[in-house]
Every structure is written in structure tokens, then in C-alpha cells.
Length: 418
Image 1 (cartoon, one colour):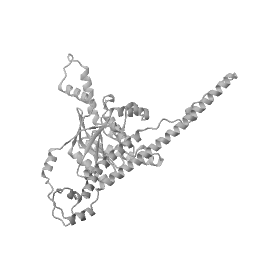
Image 2 (cartoon, one colour):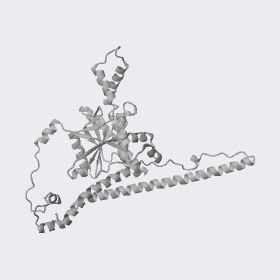
Image 3 (cartoon, helix red, strand yellow):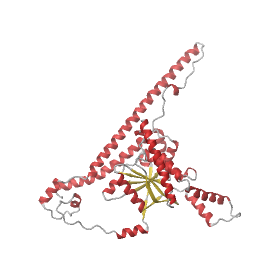
Image 4 (cartoon, one colour):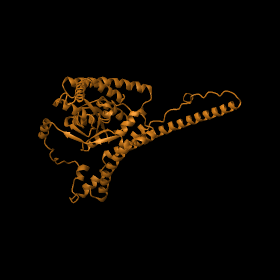
């Protein structure tokens, strides 16, 4: 399904809670229209004015609840190897977005990208999935309101593997969700955030969460709906400035802190007859004595971590996808060039005929609309290619990081340090 349909369900489900906020905004505007001589502002009026003023501020930070982070990590792990997507619920206060709860969306909620669609059967199936996700999202928001829980969508979360998350489907979903937060003209566009969790980092014991929002230049280009070459140049858009990263802070409730205090640290591993792993070998001091025969056996079974091979495969896949998209763009441009050449030839021929008829005293022939005679389409969008280039760049960075660790391990084996 398309990301816009998911966001439409979120918009429909969140319409009721916004009535109170609309009332506050109305009170604030009414209070703003009165002068001090007519009626002094009360504390409630001042608070309402501050709320309206803060609604126009750009989001500069994200405060994530610990329980929400745990839900995101669990969903990403359960959904692997597929991507995990879900909605963020919370509240924006003076440029700081507080995410207090999340709920997951069904699989393939954001749908496939535009380059993967084109068959009518696939589009019909995607529409059916979209209707199901719409009903699911509306029901979830309704149930959350029934138990007086936060039911105000503020963004999306995306669980990826090896950092590949930038795609047109994710951007479409983020843009659609941001429509919810548009309360004062166009200032609300781009206020929705995207939380990205990399499952590969968690597998290596380093849980990471990153927050992004749409860049102002990309918002302007997206509003115009043009991503041809000249539009990208005018807005100075590349894959690196589509999103703006903002800092994330983690907040734990008192109950969660109490639970963490009861957890004990893992004890030292008991003696085992099995050979030590590569990680335990690397933790040994370089000056520690090592049995020669044992080291030889371990060197024979020493293997690079699976993340290295997976990173290489991910980079090659991203490279193939980008090359395929570049080939499609090139083919469309060649087709467009041929049609334009045919149209120019037709116009030149018709001008020559009319000039000859004018010399003969005959009325000129009408010049028909070339758009009806030839398939003069617009220049193909470069948005998908830019997104794929961003995925390739991210995959290459991950490959460089993991390859550096693998190179150190291989050098250690070669020099006999392990």
C-alpha cells in the first residue's frame, strides 16, 4: 500500500483529539484580538498564546521514552529480515518532541517503491493491503483513546538492517504524517519525525536510534512535486540533505528505573571445554602467554564476522538497484529526446509548407498541437535515483566500518597476535 493511505488513516483516527487543540487555538486567537484596555489577559490566555507561538517553532530535539524504544527494538527483531514500520505517538512542546508510545503497523505498511510497481495486479493487491492497514490504524487509535492513552501521531519509526532506510516510500509516509501537524499555514510541514533503528548494530551489542526530519529545501521541492534535474539544482538537493538529523535523548520512568535496578550484571563465563570465540580471543592482552598448538587450531577456524559478508552483499545489491534505476532514467530520456526531435521536424516541415503556400497565395495549413501528435512526456523524476544513491552511500559506509574491523583481525592472525 502507499504511505499516504497509512497516514490518511492516522489523520482520520486523530481528528477527535485535535478538537480540543483547535479550541485552544481559537481561544488564543480571540485573546490576541483584544487589547489590554478591553480585557487583561489571564494566565490561561497567556498559556494559549505561548502554545500557538511554540507550534511554529522547528523541532530541535526528541525525547524518547524507554518503553517506546523497547517496543521499537523488539518489533525490528521480530520482523527481520523484513523492515519494521510503526507510528509514533506523543506531544510537541516548544520545539521538543516527546515520544511516549508507539504501535507497529502490519508488514509492508509503507508499500514498495514506485520503481517496483507497474503491474495492475500488484497495484490492486497493494490497494487491498492499504485498506486493511487503514482499518487497523483507525481501530488502534480509537482503542488508545478509550484507555486515555496518547493517541496523537507525531511521526514514524523504521527498523532497518545495516542502515539502509532512505527510500521514496519512507519519505512519502513521513510527508503524509506531517500533514497532521500542520496547524498554522505551511509552518507545520516537515514537523513529523522519523526514528531509525539499525538491527545490525543491536546484534553487535550497540543499540542505536536516530531521529530525522525533512529538510526545508526538500519540503519546498516536494510541495511543488517536481524532481527533475533543474529542480534539484535550484533547490540544491542531494541525498545527504533530504533529511536533517536531530538529537535524541532517552527518558525512563520511575517504574522502569526500579526494574533496571533489580537486574543483575551477567556473571563471568564458567570454564568450558569448547574453544574460545574470536571475540574472547581479541579481549586477551597481547602480552599474555598463548599456547602454540591451541593458537594454531584457533587460527584454522578463525572466521570473519557474518556482518562483513552481509555488508558486502548489501552494498552490491544497492549498487545493482542504482544502476538499474539509472538505466531506466537513461532509457526514458532517450525516448523523450526522440519524440522531441520528431516534433521539431514536424514543426519545421509545416513552417516550410506554409511559407511555400504563402508565396503561392494559398492559405496556410493549421499547426496542430504537437502534444497530441507525439508522446511528449515530462522529464522523469530523479527522486527515486537520489534515494537509491543515498542507500548506496550508507551501505558503503557500513562496509568500510566492518571491513576495518575485519582487516585488523586478519592482520592479527597474520602477525601471530592471535
